[in-house]
Amino acid sequence: MRLLAFALSGLLVGSFLTVAITRLPAGERVGRGRSRCPRCGAVILARDNIPVVSWLLLRGRCRSCGEPISPEYPIIEALTAALFLGAAAVFEPLELAIGAAAFLGVMTAVTFIDARHKIVPNRIIYPSLVAFGVAIGVGDLLGERVDALRALIGMVAYAGPLLLIALIVPGGMGMGDVKLAALIGLALGSIGLEYVAVAAGVGIISGGLGAVTAVTILRYGRKQQIPFGPFLAGGAVVATLLGPQIADLYLRMTGLS
Image 1: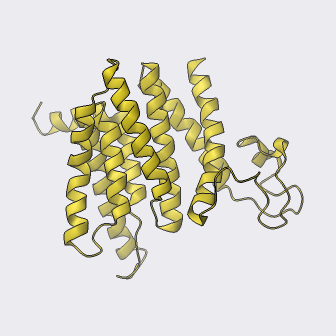
Image 2 (image 1 turned 90 degrees about the vertical axis):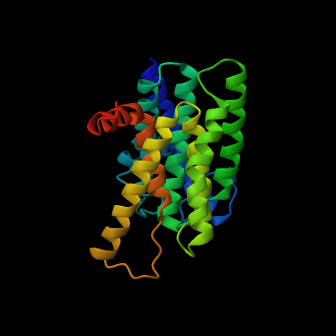
């Protein structure tokens, strides 16, 4: 029942994220009115707004005008449900599972927005920093399995070097990526610094490989911007679900354990 509840909640949150991902970069309010077809302007009916199911029943088209509906919508909904399910399976304490699910939802939104628009929106990062900071502080005071000091260390350890790169190397790192790293370090550091280390390792290495691929295979020019946020967010997702296992494997492979 717990896994089912998280999966269903993930579908609903994923449906909300599709709206946020579309409206936030355009400067629109997420709660501004009901969703409409971008072509004919028809209001999306409740029966046509069931996560994943409605898209499949409508065969990916608007009921009113037949305009194709991007498969990105059911993908985000299904992905969010899978991540929520993963959070419920990995973290036994309910409060940690809920916090991890919320964090993974934020990472999903950042990934799709940065990949599409090459921005990491402050309207997501700032409220998330405040919300997770307050939750971690309160949880620490109540004796929950989070540590506020460790969260601050994780935030500084991850965001600090990226901030130096952003200040020293022109165009080397966007400030949005620095803020995203601060959020990742804060949230994951609260449950263990090994989570932050894995997030940084996976995010930075995959980002480097992605940049090399873009230049050598996709023929990106020097002036073409490669969004780094999806790699940082992807590293955070991997660390959230598999952080201790990857850290332990690395230590055993290097003979440090």
